[in-house]
Length: 243
Length: 243
Image (cartoon, rainbow over all chains, first blue to last red; front, side):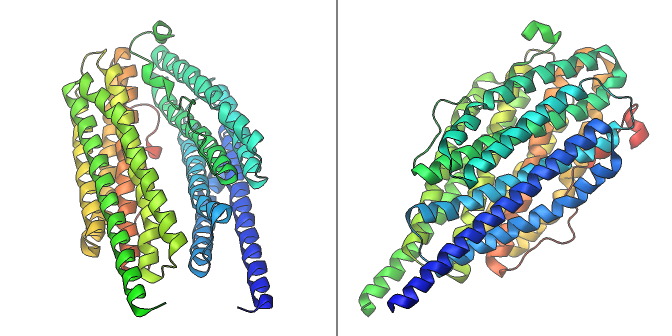
């Protein structure tokens, strides 16, 4: 290959990598916005907004397809190594995580319709707090990735326990409402599934932080974090008995 | 490259692809076995078995890491094209789906401990039926992939509605038990999350079927299947009112 041609190829490869990064940024923005709208629809009992979130999920899926195509083209046409290869491969994981985040947003939005059929449950406020927490972690995790900032990624990763703690206390709160009045059972069941969706978004933010660490350092950030759903331990009878 | 050397490279590439397929087969077998054990632990209230499933999850995760490493090596050392590239890229998706299946099995097993603290709920039998259905679909989807059998893959894909229907009827059944007696609320909540886990395994089986189709045909099998959780429509009050 002539030096000029080689230089051209390198420039083109770099610009394709940049494009991949921009597409990930765009997908991240879409997923964040879907989640924020779903949370707003939930707290304001806004059916129109909920319906927009459900319809908007397709756009996120199509960006994932686009990322997968870019990755396959980059891999088929080049032989990337080292950090380039890690960036390209991690794009698949990130796109898949963001697609799941958008699914969780759509699932939350779906349930707004059914929740609006019964009187508001005060625990919706706690669900909103959990939502705000995981949304901020998701933003932070995405920014860490896009800026290749391991310190910020580590902070996101360390905050997963906050999500688990808030989720557990919400789970207990919802059980209490259900036991108080059988009319609360159906709406609280849907709120429990929403809470679980949000807890999963927190897990995805943690995974994004791990991917950022891996891309920059080439090593795993895994040991030490207890990744768990603590509600497994919440038993029968009075929820306080298990506190 | 000398012809002999090239032949050697091709042979080695084929054997590496074979190895990747074998590793996927092994991971699939592990995930199936984890799910089968979790379902057995649930129906027989077997805490030892449940605990084995929880511990066994790590082995599945490590096979996923191994698949990811094989994929990166294959991509870095070769420039696969066409079906080879599709097989390699799809391995990442399949490994990720199987890892999630194993997570769902572990999550189910986790809840066995808490379920054993209260009297058995008859709906456990329906959960078992849903479990048997998704386990059979998972096996069938994996076999379709490993044999590159699009007809079998299509059949798995078409049966996703059965899973959704059974899941919806189980959801209603559990709501009824919860409304009957507040002591049923906590165990039924955990059974609902188990049911949701199993419904997700059904989705993963459907995804495996889609991947099989894509690997063999190079085109998407997507249109037409209504991929949904029908319980979004199950509302407040008497569950029969929403039937």
